[in-house]
Length: 232
Image (cartoon, rainbow, N blue to C red; front, top):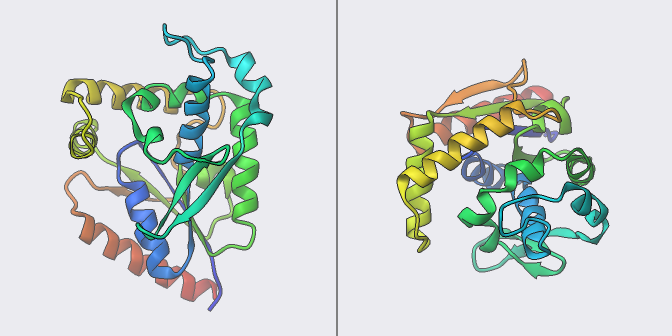
């Protein structure tokens, strides 16, 4: 049976990565978390002082240092998944912090950053058999993907999920703080000039505000198998 490209886009904290990881495992496909790549670039900017203590981002300096950023996914035997490595350092935990979350959208809006990462992403998926999630996978990275999904949920639902996730990881955050971050990321992602977050015309929308993970996965998995059978 032939392999296809599955593009999953949508708003932050809609469970895109969770669904994409599980779907890739079930299909025997490669999974790529593009959000982790943008988060790693953001972490680099914070580490290098390109984002200063006042929260100001020096775009020109970041663009000039893009050649110093080397990203790769490395399989983690303990989790069965792949961790994000930034310049040969495992940063999987660091990139999930609220500190990084607060700046990832402005960094991801930089044209040169997107061009660099999109090129890497397209190379990763050239042989198909891949599930990739992000903001512009179905519209920019793989506009010809055989299956496109667009995940959405209310800001309050997404903030609550993110808040619980951060608490479970030992984070010290408040719900209002997380909700503000979610809403701000939505605004930046949807209004940026370069590759704004938009639903591809041929994407299937999944509003999972009131949908459990199991139901959501089963529906997407069944649909994926039908598309694969059709394309194969």
